[in-house]
Length: 173
Image 1 (tube, one colour):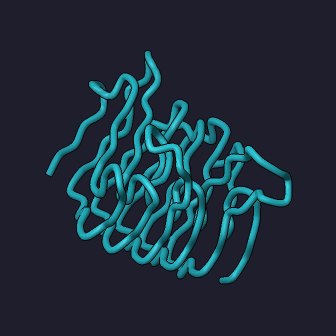
Image 2: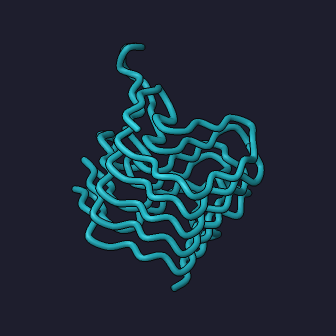
């Protein structure tokens, strides 16, 4: 609670596959402003990076976190993590690149996550409030299955913003 880091204000995972379960991850901030612009900061609550493989983020309350992108969970080259049964509310994404930034969950660069049975609600963003997916060519892309994505705010999208080779991604209700 109340932590600040460039990426992963609450928890940062680089090249790992931990199980992150049963936590309250709140009021953290991913902020690289001390490095000078332009800087990328993601994962206000949790950051997964570097082809980590199979991290599991399950049964957590992720609330009140702030980041440029991925205010609750930011994934950059995260491999194939499982994001399951989390509640993500009142998070704020501040990035201004409305094409592929922002989001409560942000998934880019070979992050083929299974995002299953989460509540993603009442989050806000400058651009994209819900889930941002940027899928690279040759990857399977993320799967969103049985999630509740509701009452998020953003100037570009409030639910799901998918870019790149997103035809491989799946959204199943």
